[in-house]
Amino acid sequence: MPFDKLGRSLKDLRISVTDRCNLRCSFCMPAGGEYEFFKRDEILSFEEISRFVRIVKRLGVKKVRLTGGEPLLRRSLEKLVEMISQEVEDIAITTNGFLLKEKIKDLFLAGLKRITVSLPSLRDEVFSKIVGKQVKVSQVLEGIYTALELGIPIKVNICVVKGINEGEVMDFIEFFRGLGVEVRFIEFMDVGTLNGWSLEQVFSAEDILKVVSEHYRVYPLERANGETALRFSLEDGYKFGIVASITKPFCGDCNRLRLTADGKLLTCLFASEGFDVKKLLRGGVGDEDIEELVKSVWEQREDRYSEERLEKKDVKKIEMFKIGG
Ligand code: SAM
Ligand code: SF4
Ligand code: SF4
Image 1 (cartoon, rainbow, N blue to C red):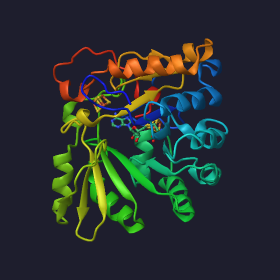
Image 2: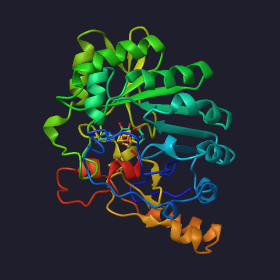
Image 3: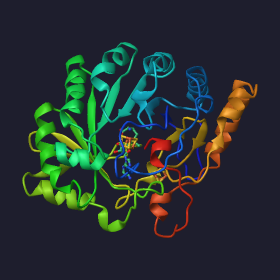
Image 4: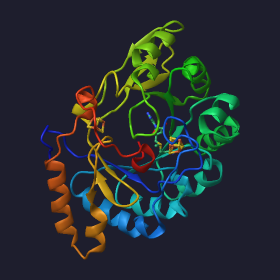
């Protein structure tokens, strides 16, 4: 198992299966932006992706998460889930949930183990404003209910942005507590270049805890190694999390490798460029040689952008919808 320059081992792989999306969340892919998407032949095939998973499994990867853009837009995604679930035990997906109701059963039967649904609001008018078109929260909720009926473990992410949805912290806690679904509040991050991020818009972990503590006694839980969220429990045992990459960075525990839809390997969300795996996969390079090259990419890694954010001013950043969060 390789260790990077800061002593972190490789455990998770996050794969973006497409850079396209059916929504335009203002904090990720603002409406009206000019977007250029990968062409069909630029993105990795399911065979190429599962070959890569087989290779990195030998380097210690145990968990795979499919993301995007919106991963449910990738046709026949269940086939990829089936292929990957033969390689690793834990295969999850992060989705905006819009197509979940129609797709979840096939994904579940193919071996999908867990789902994270990203939902920025429980109010139709706020949700519509955030995504730049008329949408209904119920469409996402129906997908969540269907997943719960199938017994798939599910979490809900909300990216909290001041002035947009920070007033919904308690609504999320109460609504999802009722369903037994863990919520994770994500601090608005300075990923990419398009979302107009500023520190003033970050509703911090401290702000979130202050709101919840006005209603309930909140107990911090111990953080497991490699866990990105700070986790808390209410008196009745309901658990929620906060991903505080701005105010409480967790780079020291970052065990994650990211593969973009066009086959670039990134060792950080804030990386400026990736290592071209597609060239190797399509260039007749053998599995063992690719394994060695990926190992050396990991061993040379020393990313800790979130801890160095204030010193790093002019970093060339890749957009969130190309990396997948
Ligand atoms: N489309 C899928 C979704 O929304 O779940 C998967 C890709 S999306 C890029 C992955 C996650 O990134 C989502 O949970 C989303 O809320 C989060 N995200 C996007 N932009 C963000 C930002 N600027 N700061 C924090 N989280 C962000
Ligand atoms: Fe699409 Fe997800 Fe980005 Fe929203 S956060 S625009 S759903 S990729
Ligand atoms: Fe990992 Fe980079 Fe995020 Fe730090 S900033 S936790 S190294 S992805």
